[in-house]
Length: 186
Image (tube, rainbow, N blue to C red; front, side):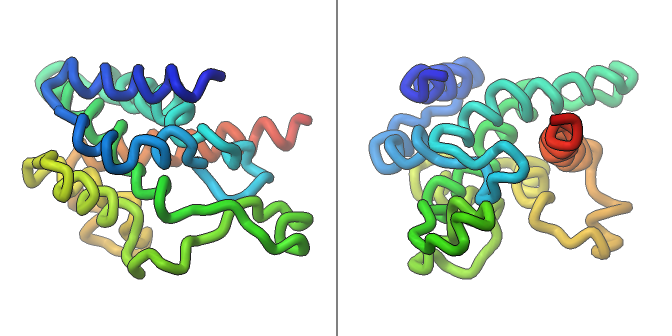
């Protein structure tokens, strides 16, 4: 895995759909490039560069495949799915930092929450990071950007979210499920 190439590919994919991330890269490029996807070793997604690796090669393809399962008239615009998949978790680049507690590291908690971050959810913080760097979203994109942060007991989110949001949530869940199943077999 070449984390520098992943950053370039991430920026290229966004540029291809008309999203300018030059300011975001200028302000957070190193952090995004090196970010982890998860804090726990047990799911196989906690390592430097895991964020872009996972959203480029797992999350986005899963979301696009789920979308293709629906009748054509119900499908979500592919560029909207790509945009949200590539951006909705970028706050992990500032939210998660390497853990310095040896006891927690031995327990598999390789990254910890950055205490200097605000107490808001990842999707909302990702949305704010994008907003601060000139990236705008439509209302349905905002819903999809923040759907993973909604509690599963939230009936509105669970039963009344758009198909777009449901696709993003399902693709995100698939990543974790895949890695849990892999760990059971190893």
